Length: 537
Image 1: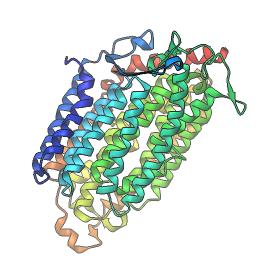
Image 2 (image 1 turned 180 degrees about the vertical axis):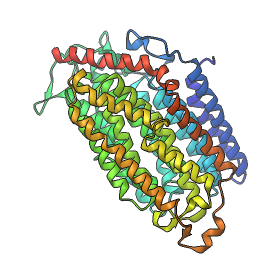
Image 3 (image 1 turned 45 degrees about the vertical axis):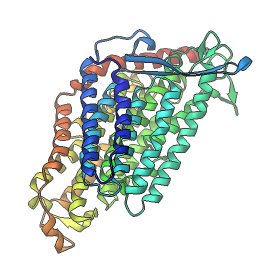
Image 4 (image 1 turned 45 degrees about the horizontal axis):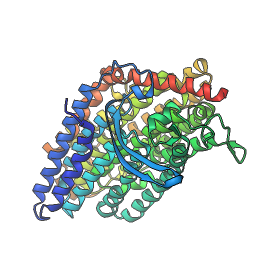
């Protein structure tokens, strides 16, 4: 196995961005192929990470839970009698972060292929794309909170410009809205990061180490030490901190009521950026909840389990109902993401093995399915320059292969047994409905209402299929008939691998569940045991 595998995955795109930056702008082919080659190497490295990961390892502490660990001193500042600031370059993966890095590696390659038709400002586009790629991998690998925050913030600028320059007619509005929402969430996370740094460490030395934060290495009398019982406005300050990071990452997830930036961003973003936004960037929000909110504040997670589960349930039902009302198919898929990411929040809230396993499985499955859904919208838009459901009918008679992929991914998203979307949602619902009898944190009725989300998603997907693909062929503009060509080789290369993965994970979910099982088991036990300890202080 390659030494420093994670560092290579983080810095290779940045090195490639520098190379692309010096390639003359008119050499568009060289720019595209350099980016694609880099992403293919990233994919190979991510698969090496998957193969080399030891899923049978059973951790006894958070310090023992991570593999492929790299640690180097990064920033060291002395402030005399005031102390020192120590930040480390500290990366590693466990069963929670590893599958998300593999997901990123796959979708980043597909995103480049989808971007092949970008013709304006090609150099700038792919430089930003490569920077974004490095930021995504860095977020999932960072074990130092400061380093995580740097990568988390580093994602904002590339995405802001990728939407704002190469997006649709309302791209400026959508990019600014995305930036402001995410920046607000980042500021909430920053406040908690500073509070944790002042509260965590060893031998009186403060630390940004996520491992020390998860292990509960609090300094005596510090602000967030569960023994101190500090309160603000009559509320335990640890609960306030949990609420801040919860909102910060729920904005990124996104969950109701912090979701309104997502449909605008998706509608205006280029197809490839919509693929990355839905497939990977939203997962950073879910990952932050796993790694920071629930792992560092287990007491607050247990005490606030019911309201968080209700927010997840509301996101599932509300997102589905709003999706059903859309006539723009891209906006329909955007709201469906709000609904399906609600299962991630619900699965986490119940703090059971089934619920959290389903939550992580749902993130990976949704990454593949949502990425594919935005690709099929892009395929249709390339031919019609229109996304309105009412403006086209009977496509199955003209584009049978394209229709096959649409049906596959629609049914995968609505949770058809045998496809990956079914596994994650069923595990979450099993965890939610059984949570009342297991840990008494979440009442059973929340999971029962969340079942409506599957029914609603079936309704809007089947209705869309009936309106757009079946019946008599018809389009609003007759000139489109000449452009209604079957999917080409480039589009086949994008869609076929995602279709295979959706089927593979649906039939053999153990491909993903086995490597993550011990990490999820350790996380659940850590949250419950440590949470009970903190609550008893």
